Image (cartoon, rainbow, N blue to C red; front, side, top):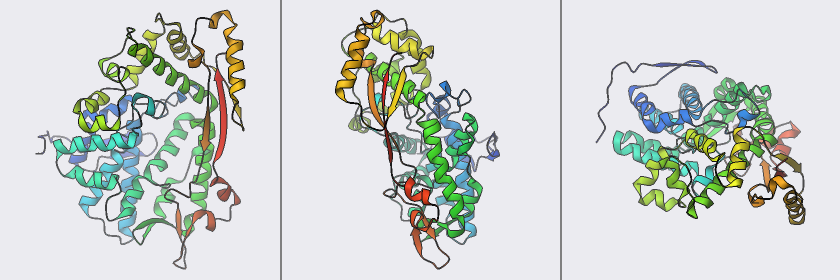
Length: 412
């Protein structure tokens, strides 16, 4: 049964710094935007701790999903203008799918994705939220979920939500570029949308859009190295991960740990995918969790009696970030062990658990993944070919190969 909602004054517009005025498409979508589940995204940062490097990068997931919805509306209009049949019900459903595609993000977006919960992606959690909303708002959400999970008979609708040329990426590249000040991420989203086409039910790009999509791929590659995988951002986000892991270990050993009720719920036990499916309280606690729970805890933890948790938390709060080294080869265990031994000899580290303060991992930048929803071009001849084969830009073939780098992070 659909929830009763006040329908007064819902012809709203939002003044967006990227696109100007964005109109809310209809009253039903307005009601979804007003729901606490989606309003929570105002309290989830789009770029995690990137603002510690780029002070302007303080925009939120809420801004992003509104922008992605706006682009989706333009894409649907382009495809309908080109003669493709998209019903009003399908249009609303795909707008809802893109609006809700990030609703499952936890605090600081990707930074804590697999530490708040275990082996549950934000896409999985988004689907649980959509199912829960369906109980309140009725079957309008059912088609949105079908498209979101790629179970609809028109695959191009799913590809507009999730592919290598989806409305998600078109929005976040321009938006993240704008707020970070890194101009290399700016792309011609309007032209790319105008070049969209559907062939045999699949989303393709008209041949004349090839240079725009080449720039899009290169921009994505540059934004990964300059913003998303910037080494100082990586150091800060891994420090946050290890602070949370330390807090979890202490909480489970009976140590008193300050936390909001929602954060305590996830500190005290491992939450798996099956828990979301079987226990309604899991999703409700997740819905109560945002960046502010973590930030408040870090401030309190910076004075905790556990020296390791206190050191990590204070270092994040005061931006005393760890040193990070980047290598093309993995760091050997002997090298990491030697580093820990050297640090252990310093008086200020003697009471700290260095397994939480020295860490190494791999960074992967794959700007164009031919194994996942590759970008196909519709040639004037009617032939459909992969972007990397059609492009006369040698960089595109190179960008299809993942670049892997390794890092070693430790206190200065």
